[in-house]
Image (cartoon, rainbow, N blue to C red):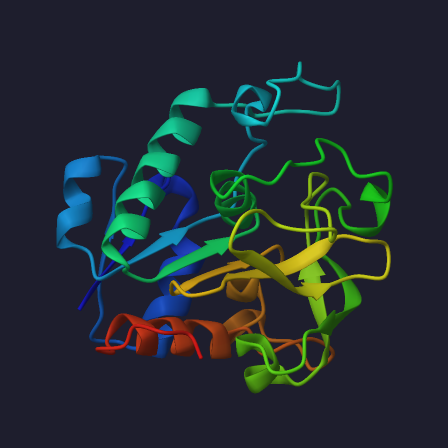
Amino acid sequence: MKIGIAGPSASALNYMEALWRADPRLKIEISLNLRRAADWDALLLPGGGDIDPRFLPGHPPAEPHCTDIDPLLDERQLGFLERFVQSGRPVLGICRGMQLISLYFGEDLCQHLPSAGRHRQPGRDLLHPTRILPGSALARLYGTSLTVNSAHHQGVPVRGAGKKIAVIQWTDDGVAEGIAHESLPILGLQWHPERLCGRYARADAADGGKIFERFLAAAGSASRGFA
């Protein structure tokens, strides 16, 4: 089984560690070459910088808080997502990756959250409580309440996450923390499970390792579902 990480190799180490912790035999490839997608059983869209607002509905100008914008990276990652949506293979989007999933399915993105101070502080993750939709894939892993980490200032509004995408985890300030496709094996998390497992595990927050175990189970399953 091979998992593809569509992102810069310099920022992929934590994701690779989390995946190998879930299965030491796993093959992992990091690439932004779309031709490699054919060889991957599942796709991980990692965190990173802000998304170019030209990809947002209405193509608004960038707000002053936006940084590290890379339109070529946005275009290539959305291209990988398109391939995996078409083929029905599993996708896990983390932080920026979740935002790309939401945009792909038609939802807007808040370029700078009014409550950004609750979700990002330079140099460290913030912890905060969330609620999880009963009966969802996340609820089967964690129950209906969960403390998670975050390091973002952009976000997906709880009011909806696009066509055929549902918000399954959220904060009390109206920010989506988890989304899932209604029929495809696509899961997005605004938080960072790779920084809540192994050497980064915390007793006061979620066990992020469960996410990667479930992701690999979906990649290796004939049904390819996260349920």
